[in-house]
Length: 164
Image (cartoon, rainbow, N blue to C red; front, side, top):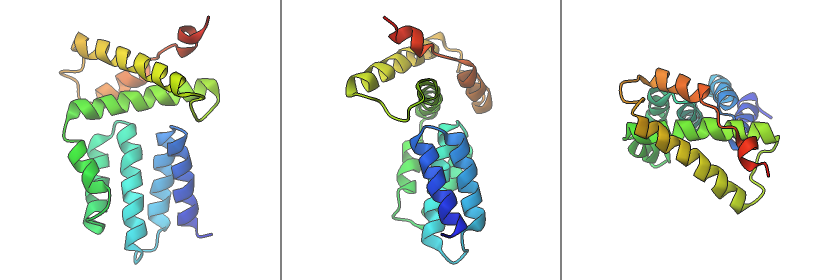
């Protein structure tokens, strides 16, 4: 198997496991190893790298990846991601949610929700905390990097919330 394919597949696995940091690293390696004449593969990798970077809160870098992907493959999904990320508030929500989901899955040592009820409860809890953050107004004057640091510092104690 070619090295760029291996890195791409590994990056997809990391994304599925809510680990965008390692996914972004793998996609970067995949881009370095991808043959320059395989434009479709390169476009796909740029798109996936953008997804990982967006989950990490690097919205500008994600948009750059999606712009590159949409230039290479105008009919691909990157164009939709560029339109979807027009709102900074939405981008911040996705970053916060991604970080908290990564922490949740890391704490339970599993990559998936066991039930739809579990998924709904976790998402309801994350959303409730997000609404409190927004209502407090602390994000209004912060740069993207400051928000990302705050989101990483903010930890929801899921174990305590689900204990009997």
